[in-house]
Picture 1 (cartoon, rainbow, N blue to C red):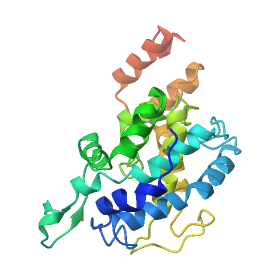
Picture 2: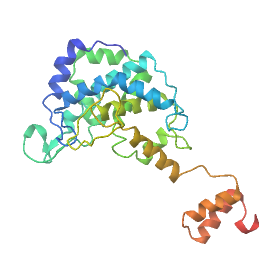
Picture 3: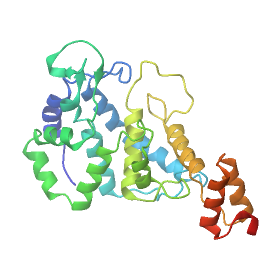
Length: 266
């Protein structure tokens, strides 16, 4: 994907997102356009920090190739600009469409779904449509993937998403889409200001928000502890089963399923 945003971004994208309000609790910085620009500015810092995370062989990020191609960087740029465009369609105030005004909580439920962001993208006009038509199938799929899943951290990585993101050891897969998604999540979480933002030393250089590395690592460790690789040693496996407070028949059934014998026969 190759495009110069300057000629139309300030008009088309700004006109779509600037009027859209956000929750003052989660986005004290202001409207969607302000947040979008803040996210875009996090690209360099997010990539550098991501590369630092991959260098730790014990972290959930260690499977990744830390290098990014020019095409991948461009997808991240476009993803930053487009990740919240669906809020123009999805945002409500007090359960009414934001354009109707009103009072109450500002929400943007489902803004990451194609039913919201695709119609808004179509309003961007010919420059966007021409660029999109020229993009490779892989670039299109990866862009859609990172937009659709950029709320995965907030949703605590649902089980279906985890199957796509992680391997059996609880580490993130060395997959291009997963890598781009995690970097966009870092950008999105850092490119905002929360009203209740605590003082935290885990801050990504150049950002104004809490770094969510610890949250991502927490989810990885949670999956690793819930579903650890089953050991081949019968005693170790039996200890794990008994530690789960299973009924005796459940322990026996699980043990027999792995080793073909009851614990007493080993």
